[in-house]
Image (cartoon, rainbow, N blue to C red; front, side):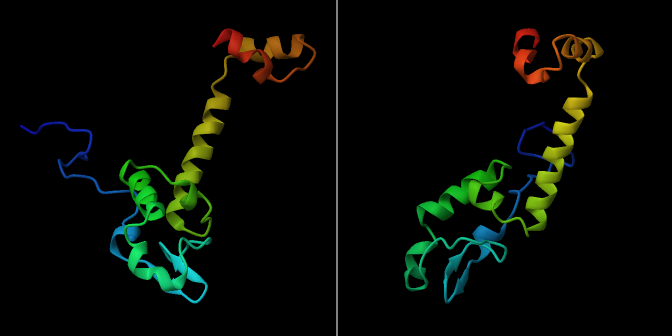
Length: 125
């Protein structure tokens, strides 16, 4: 019998962070240090490479990824395939939420002179 822990997947194995890159390496370029090859804004100047590994910026990125979320830094790295996959899932969820609105809300929207549903949705949800 296996215990169901939230940090384990369906096979009973511990699922890892969303991305492993910030734990395995970082990139030192002339313009500065990046936490991954898709990173855009630098997290530290090139000459601070010794202090960067445990810097607050990288610790924040790691804490978000451990929780299965994208950090604000990662969300700016639109070339990353992991970021693209997560953002696509979020867009899909938002569009499915929109499609699941009940018909009476659409009728009410039309009756209220075409006002967007956002204006009065908080009264009915």
